[in-house]
Length: 142
Image 1 (spheres, rainbow, N blue to C red):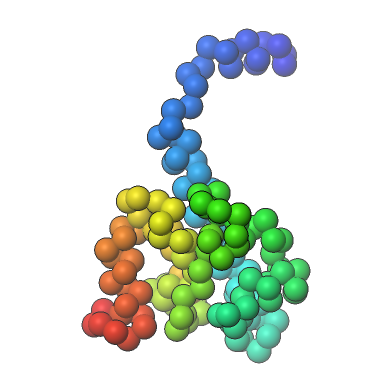
Image 2 (cartoon, one colour):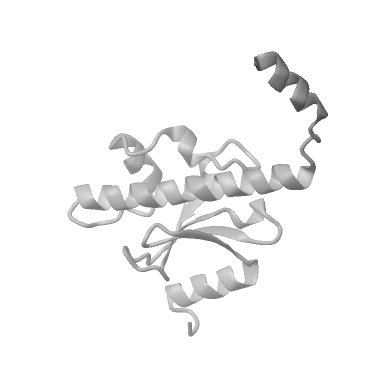
């Protein structure tokens, strides 16, 4: 059976750069969604308070909610955790419009992977991401 599968795999087309890119971006978004859920678990264990924005990575690791590898985006440019995912200021838990976490915007040309306060995630265009983040920070109208 294994040999038959191996032979069949030789005739399948090799993945192109677009499909690899798509796979990496989807993996990154799923990872980001998992981190958002981790922030919600952290809050449930800490009087409904989201982790401190300056230490959120360390706090999730210390409480064994996530592993360090989960904080590294598949689309990252460096191996620094700070280069992968960012916690948004003024995030509101359970709000599907509030940006909770986002992937470093330089990772993807056409979009930003974003997780919201309800732990949903989506890919949004850069301009829309910037507008929504500015609105969340209170620097522009929504």
